[in-house]
Length: 404
Image: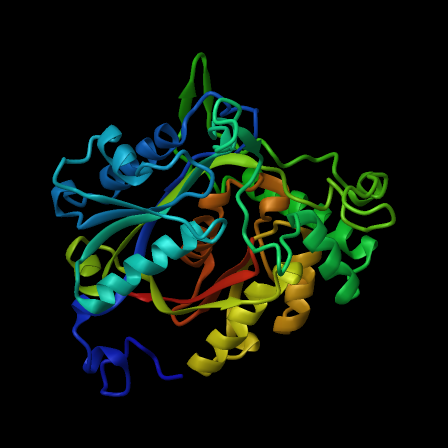
């Protein structure tokens, strides 16, 4: 693959308008709180609004130049949380908002959509990411024609028709563990590693500049609530299986539902230079895939295979890989399918440690690539952000760090 920013005629820059090369230049997030934990009283729009405001303030961009705010959301109450949060964050009324839903892939898809719009020449400056508050998500119910005064409450939306089957996420993780021979010890080791890495990154101050503090009554929430030093392998081995009597998936090697927001600035290479960013994370390509919903946990690997084939990249070319840790079983199976060493991914931990605010988790992957590249990356480094999604969907995206 030739250097996409080469100026000698061998790369994209010599042939393509710099206004159509999408890059991510800055990201911010809230700390992640466990469901009914530290952020339990904060609604989704109030999680997202200060993150959007911080992006504007910290970047020096002009808010009235923002073409759109594109936000992923999975368990909200409908409406348009992107627009609501943008206004709550003090953005001008002239800035629109778009909310999208591909469940836990929503935040990543929001960023990819912004990149596609830049590449199409439809705009030059977007705020994109995701948010969910599992703590304040509204109750959901079907209205029954026979007894409309007695709604039929349900806990989650249906992702696959009855004719195919719509397994719960944990059941699907058990299916993946059995089919791809991911044993219990390996799952527990990976979960313990996620907690250990997340705590180490926090202790080293690696998250300090990206987290926007959230005021909740008398408390200021500015630290991820989920990571626990006590969750070592010996402790995790004591957890019983949750989804099958003799299964391997436990509460310890599964993520916890969480509250949080993540957003990044997506702009063009030309605009990045204009506002003074000398390094940026360039969008290369993205792919989505579908698989049997009973084995939904490997869909991200299937999407990655399509993406790498199309871009003529191999797993060995990747400097960094971020993969959402909904369940250890599905991450490990996906690593095996992608040809990746599980120890080489998620270098600062993942959802097994910090939790899973569904709409925001995909956006966190991109923020992780951006922050790690800015700290230790070399020009030309390739990064992958991918995840598997309810209903048998996968999304994968390829990024490159380099000079703006």
